[in-house]
Length: 515
Ligand SMILES: Nc1ncnc2c1ncn2[C@@H]1O[C@H](COP(=O)(O)OP(=O)(O)OP(=O)(O)O)[C@@H](O)[C@H]1O
View (cartoon, rainbow, N blue to C red):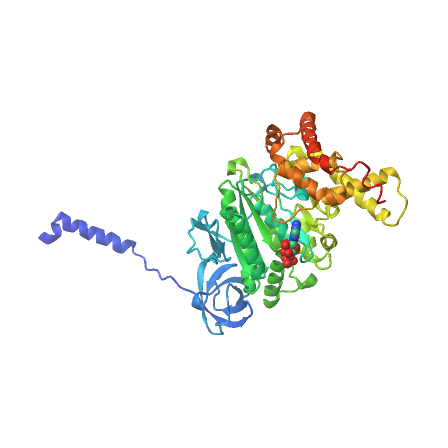
């Protein structure tokens, strides 16, 4: 051994080099590159990627992405997330090793984005806290709590007769142009002081309709607590397909932070159609109405993510208002029946009522809320009878049309029912607080409006609403705090209402002359 080799410092270096050589392992990371074999609207067939996983994100040229969907041995079917006009057979495709995800975080509030997380407004780049996969498993049963807190929509007919609770999934269903979007937007506007964050997801809507919704939200200050996710009608079907999942991941982020969130899917008919288009192009076998076999599953796994989390998981909630468009009022078509069975109730909008100017055109008889009743504010119990009275009226009204002579009781029921119908009308973009609703509906239920001519009901109601601040403050506070109204409270409200309604009362029975 030479003198240099005996030097302990040099020996130490030699030892370290020896250990390094021993532990060195040579590894080559293979990068799988496939090739496009064919392209059709919204999808591409790719070969040469044997290791690709289901729903893995694939990168095409020019920043175009796709989701691996059909995994056949010879080639895979890919859903394209963008314009495919430049794509052609032979182009390279690279695996990314990850699934599709979206940016989430407080920075998204007030923003309009596309389902890929890119901004669609002119407010600069999106600032986000993390990225979440768009498809996430729904929370397990043990993670969930019962629906116990109301989600006030501000719409009288809904809050009083078809109440929605936080964590519920309530379908809004109706023909085209029956006011479906209007109901969802009113529900969003009503959350301004309720600390509920909102996500509005437009799928396949016309750009002009989406612009109108955003303008309304902005004008009423609702963008301060809303995220808008837009997949327009002219986007590729892949974008429309992922939109509700991306929006749900954004909403879930806030829910998991303990916030109450409301999400609107406008609408899932377009979503189902986009998925049908993709499935047919991917040559999946068509079933009923040419929809693929897993059409029920794509919607159930989406809506199952809405829930009310347990206190251990911070107690946040995600309430879903999916919208579905029917054709010729056919609620027994495939997609409507699927969604009716997935959700916890439905608000049915009737084109007939819409034509008659009864807005919102909610058909109370065909609408139901399967869980919200338990979460409804206690004060609404004092007006619970209204729903029954309205149903009785609707039945009798049909008979009355035949010109039969009516007895006194029937005449009174019809007169009362007409006033209920008139009082349930409500302009869009004007949600009412719970106390305002209770004042009007209590006066209605106790018959104070029965002596007001039907054509003056709106005016009389406006007087009540204008003066709603003059009603005893402690009672209003109790309504909001979910306390039951005592007999004394009811009396106090009715006394005040009676004074305000005095100028509208007619001495004779206003229905006497007409029937
Ligand atoms: N309560 C209301 N008061 C006054 N106008 C209303 C009310 N509800 C809806 N409208 C009007 O009815 C029209 C249709 O409403 P909306 O766009 O909400 O319907 P939709 O069913 O969502 O339509 P689409 O089928 O195009 O999605 C709109 O012009 C809207 O302003």
